[in-house]
Image 1 (cartoon, rainbow, N blue to C red):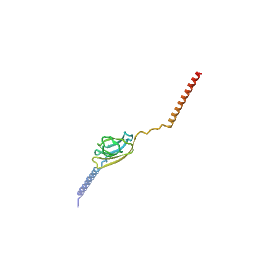
Image 2: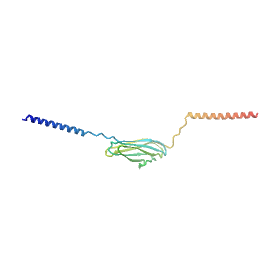
Image 3: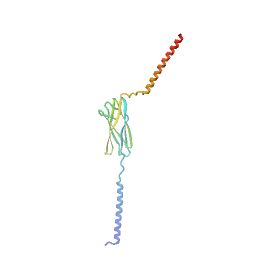
Image 4: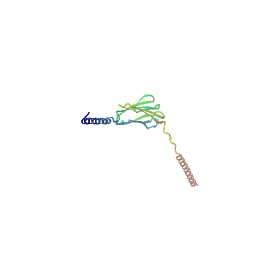
Length: 198
């Protein structure tokens, strides 16, 4: 049978083991705390100038933001399906096949870019330009895809504006009064000449 001294020693040892286990458990919980998720990059395509005349340029804007919390550089590929007879004047683009043009951009983390994409309207067109955007971040396995359809118009000449009906009627009234004034002037002059002769 154990003496009171041994029982006391065993109790103190048991309490020490519980204290150490609790301390380790609390540390492990802190170590497993999840880090905040990085902010996703922002990529969009929109039209800045989309209603033009033949020979002018349609202007599209590719907006790219790579947040500072990103794990690496952002790589963006833009592929445009352009109307027949049109051409891309931006130097970054290469035409792979008829009607398709593509360019690749790289944006470092913490930076943003607003890229102007110029298309020359060589033929009349009214419809949409389709832009396919594929992008990923270095160091991340996630791949993203966006498709944008932008309405555009290219016409041969600016539409003629017809004068308002009120303006045309006022012009006609003014012309009539001028004619009446001229006729009255001729009659007055003729009467004066006749009165002098007789």
